[in-house]
Length: 144
Length: 433
Image 1: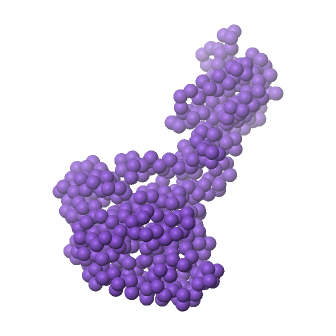
Image 2: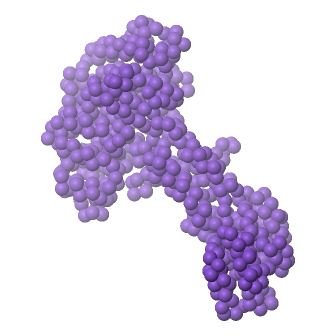
Image 3: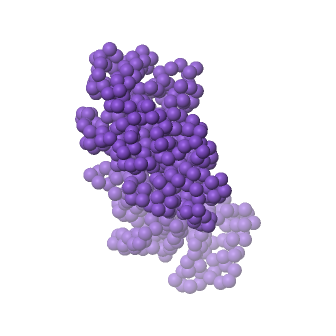
């Protein structure tokens, strides 16, 4: 699969909710690969990429959380100045809209991973591949 | 001042004789003209001829808000639409409002009753009345307006809202009587301070406040901050609108019910049994002079008691104590009647949200606030902030459109709304009334 599954969790803006999510995941021995938290004055949306989506989703749901699943795209760029800009230029030229994104650096320290959420995922994938951007497949990312 | 000295100070026997005559006329008329009443009376095996004393009223069936809803919009009218000159409406328990009508004579009756009420609160010809009740389907604005004109006072039809401008007009136009909801009066006081206006320098003598329940503590606060006498007025559109009962300036103790037009009863809300004077229970009204929309034993859901002791003001009319609560779940928010079921219908209409909600009513800066907490289920949830914020906006917009009240909508996690005995606690009212 060229896209990556991301789970998202609805959190109220109150103390301890994020820790509750991490507690549930750690007790289920689920490893978090990447995460980002979007927040407003009264709620937050936690987005997670984990090594076992199904398990994470069912554990969180069992504890009363509202959980969603979205397809995102993971892209590898060299961890150096201009790495992100290069990708964004490609997308901009092709008029591909980014809903949101976040990034992390791999353990080796040489490459960075960018996670993108697109409106039109297939079109974005096509544009990125055409421009020779390295896409990280889901299975690979979950096992990283 | 007593506006209608004859009727307001009539001896008990005389007023009861008038009540019986008018009651019999009303019962005969509704039996002949409103199918709803004919059916109800037939079911209870009562003919209009059976009403021979005021006590016989207790045998008649009650009318509820649900009955009005079942006959929406004009089914309860007792005259042809040709004779109806005015239509008002108030919130129903769900989407549809309760509709009431008035003939030309009803408008005159109502105006006279409101003139009595304003006079009891200290107004007379020559006064300038700043009327900040809302004008529109709500009976408050136009009710006071017609009464003020009937009294011969000058009325400023300012209506609600735009408080800063109101403060300026209060300063420049020199009104002497204020009419609005009690919470809006306190809000006006605060805004006035911000605008550099001191109520001490204004010309207000008294304020006639109603459309929501308020306490003696609130009276003390209003009188202290606004430098006027605060008078309670009561009414509901199903009975006529404001002007059903009012306190007098002299005693400020209990609201005189205009018994030559409305017969009050206090009942046990569970059994329907009629309670005696002084006992707390649900207030029930029968109108005995209205043409377009007569109402028989209407259950107001307001909790109070009746006092027959003579009043120092000279009025012989029975007094009802300040309303202390409701027997249903209706909330009054900034003078607007809100039923939790109405909010529920708004939520039900939105596919993406589930009707798991809680209403939190509070009072900030003396204005009622309504927060609606809505649980986010999987259908509504999105990984994008924008989508969730749009849902909040849409709910708030629909509540405003359907109910006419502004609400802050907040999405919450599932099951966060406390459920007691399996039933969700739908309303938390934090106001100290």
